Image (cartoon, rainbow, N blue to C red):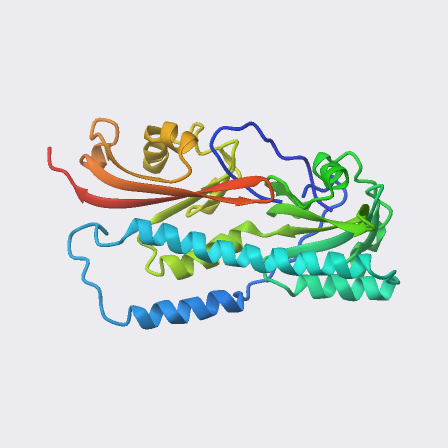
Length: 309
C-alpha cells in the first residue's frame, strides 16, 4: 500500500524495509512512545539527575561516542522486538488457515507490537494482497504487487527482506520490511509492514541525547537521509547540493564512512568557507546497523570549541 520504488545506488553503507505499489499505500500516525523507550528515558534521567555544567565549551562535554552507542543499542533493541514478533506472527499464520476475521485480528496485533509499525498486510505467494489491517483500505485487497523486487526476493529466498525509504500515498516517508509465510519450507505468502523511521529514530534520540546537544543523521547506502534533525532534509541526499555545515563535515569524512563500519574523527570547518563558524571544530562519529541484509549508517556530529584565527 505504498508509493513508488526507492533508489538504491550504493554511496555510503546503510538501511531498512518493503515497497508497495503507487495506488496501494496507507499509513497510520501514532505518537505514543514505545514502553522500552519510556523505561530507558526514566533510567537515563535518574542517572543524570545531577546538573551538568557545559560552560562555554559548545557542548564539548557531551560524549558523542556515548550518544552513538546508546542510539545503536536502543534502535537495535526495538528492531529485535519487531523482528521477533513478526517472525512469530508469520509462523502463526503458516500453522493455521485463518479466516478473514482471524487475519484482521492478527494484523491488529501486529499494529500494536510497536508504535513505529504502520499498515501491515498479508499477501499470497503470487504477491496479491489478501488482507489489510483496516476496513477503509478494503479496496486494496486483490492488488498485484508482483512487480516489486523486494517482495520477489522474499519469495525467492524464503527470508525476511528490508527495503529502502519510500513515501506513502499520504506523503509520509517509511521503510518497508516483509517476512515469508512458510508452509513445509515453501513460501505460501508474505507478511509485510512499514516502519515509521522518523519516530523510531526520534524516540531513540530522546534516550541517547536528551539535551539535544548533538546532531544526528541516519543514512542509507545511496546517501538518502532517513533521519535528520531538520525534518525538511529527510528523503534528500546528504552528499548532494546541501550547503549546510554538517553536510561539509560529512563530505570531509565520506571516504572513511564509506569504508569503515564505525569511526571517530575531528573535523575543522575553515572560516573562509563558513565565516560565521570561526574555524569551528566538530567531532564526527559513526557506526552501522545491519538488519536483514541492509544497513543504516548512524552519524553523530558534536560541535567543539571554536578555534581562534
